[in-house]
Length: 196
Image 1 (tube, rainbow, N blue to C red):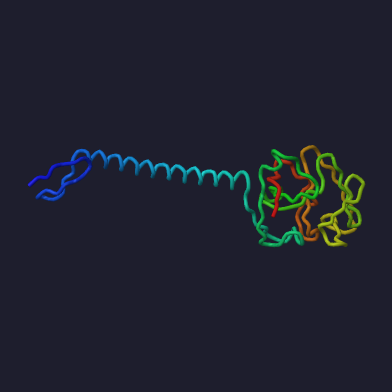
Image 2 (cartoon, rainbow, N blue to C red):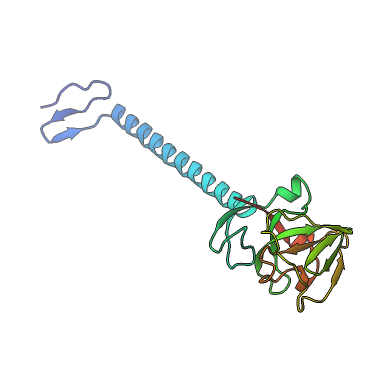
């Protein structure tokens, strides 16, 4: 017993359901739409993931403080943002900026504060820092924080910054490996500025 076929409708027959050619076209169309939807979602997800990886690796990255060389400004295990392109597009590092550097002593990474830039002369004398003959104002440090050269409090220390090099110090002057140990840091070793 056969029923008359109408467009896009399956009619029951004695053996079960049978699809007519118009219904097959509809299924092909639905299948194509489904796969187009899946392709678009996959493409959007892939592009989103790729942009996340690019942004987190080359533009803004999270960093975690390890150690106490920047105490009291930063504490061990603090999480901060590192803006990697800031110095490439906006401006050069300036005194008082907190930066991530590639540490010349062990090729690891360290967070330090820029004290002086290209063309500046830094002089340490009796625990005070002088940049180009003027005492450095450091409002971010507790009063009576002394800065001595590596070795002895009675020593004096003087260093000049060549072009594209910077003097960096940790805020915890008694427990920081910084420019007092390895000298001026080349600009290429400064990865970016840190902000909270």
